[in-house]
Length: 212
Image (cartoon, rainbow, N blue to C red; front, side, top):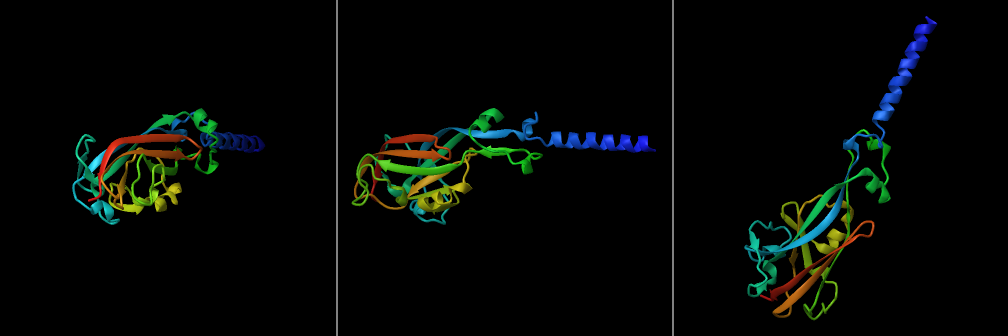
């Protein structure tokens, strides 16, 4: 009888060890080690076909075409700047080298993690209006849309909630909410800062913005 009890106890211990090993975040299961790192950010300039909708926070952006920078001047409210991100799967070792920490609570679940946005800074090569001069940050005159461009959020407000946005390959859309003083050709510089300090910079050269 004692021998049977001992065998049962031994089997119980072996079973418990097997469960713990299966939940080890450093196990060989690829499913528990998936980290997607941001590898590139690019922009695409659009001509919005439903005029002035871009200025209204609750208006969806449904119709647009690519904007050729060789075209004539375009109304500020017809400009859309599409932000595209590219993410690649990174190995567990690369992930842990970034200083991230596994939570044992999710060890038995597929572990997915992405780079988070920390800040966006937008500047121009020329004066935009009396308030925004060359090189001044102009974030406060932009709306940003996500989720299929259904509704816009002031960019400054969006940046205060950056912990809610991770780069998963989804698109974002920037639109102007205020007009320039006059027709001018702008070279925009958009700088993206990622949590952890990585920086991505995009330039939009020769953007002809009209005030009407």
